[in-house]
Amino acid sequence: MKTDDLIKSLSVGLEPVRRGAVWRQALLWLVPAIAVAFVVMVLTLGIRPDLAAAFERPVIWIKLAFVALLTLTALFAVIDASQPLARPSRGPSRGIPSRGMIGFAAIVVITAILGALQLWYADPAIRVKTWLGGTSAECPWRIAILALPIFAGAIMAMRGFAPTNLRLAGAAAGLFAGSAAAVVYAFYCGETAIAFMATWYVAGILIVTALGALLGPRVLHW
Amino acid sequence: MTEAEIRLKDLMCRGLTGDAKAHAEMLGGIAKLLRAYFANRLGAWASQQEDLVQETLVSIHTRRTSYDVTRPILPWVYAIARYRLIDFFRAQKIRATVPLDDMNEPTVESGAQAADATRDVSRLLARLPEKQRRLITLIKLEGLSVDEAATRLGMSETAAKVSVHRGLKIMRRHVENHGGVKVGDNENG
Image (cartoon, rainbow over all chains, first blue to last red; front, side, top):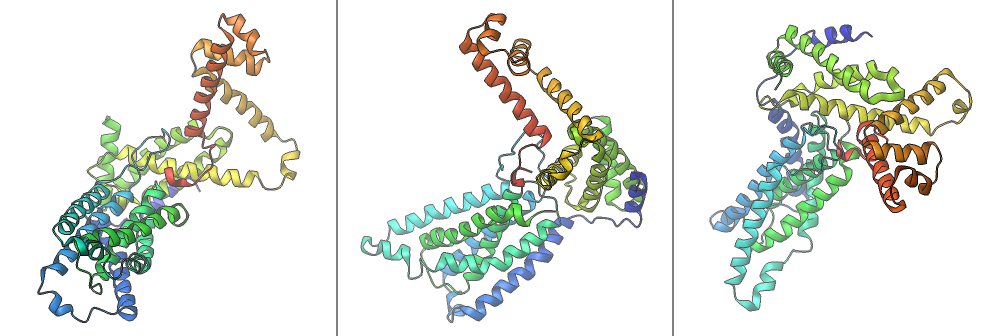
């Protein structure tokens, strides 16, 4: 087929692209994927029975704010990583962290500091116990597993865009999936220490991020 | 931004609002740029140029949603072109390791490929400083020993060895960045 004919056929019936189309397209995949993760959690772990009462105390609000901010910054990371990178052909683009990833790291650091302060003012005898809570071993893995359907949704969304650094894009997808899964998990989790979530929630998120980086080149081809 | 880039970006923005004529004109302009881009990088696979141009145009068309209008358009276009080019080279590598039967028959193509290879090497050598180029030519292409070549050019043997090593490194890096010889995951785009 001649290129001119190709161009003509591509231009026939051209649909306008609305502003914010990328965000809309992304959310179209991500919101149902998060809903699926929520259903999985409800069916397996169940929502915490004292949820209504918990909302009357500050802990759950801090928790939700933390994971919601992580999810928001991770979403920016996904959108940024879905762009063709602007580096000209000068070799590896070294996976420059996007504003989303930097924001994510900043929130983790701030929360870790707050968590450390909270432990500092706690009774020394129960510091370690506070930090480990009761579920430190299970928590990261539960978040990682809840993240899987969200990860799948993120991959499907990104394949509709044009990521060129597939490892970075995969990592961003994992970062988002883990963060959103942590939001879902927060409706089950009864732990209260800030240090707990700064450590074990983030650990779960990082597991999924690493998985995403590993799988990126394989599943993100377009 | 050059005038051409400004014009292309304007056409793209109009195309995004649904202006089919602007969109077609943009694709035509991009096609010209792509032809030059691929012509410089395909070497022995020059016959695939138009296929690659078309594939890249389709990618640009179907992914135009991902173009951020606040950013320059040419880096976006070339990033997609580069992605498709690397994909293409990876596919060729895979095919080249399959049946040996094709490789035994002398064809017009293999002759052309040999000529292309010579031309590519000369072009790579031309990028080096003169002394380095003469050194590598004497040793690698004319078969002199390092010692003989070093004497002829008036350098020590050690200096010659270092110079050859560096020169080959430059040439290899150029091939990797522009010829897709390195096969690996597409994590670098």
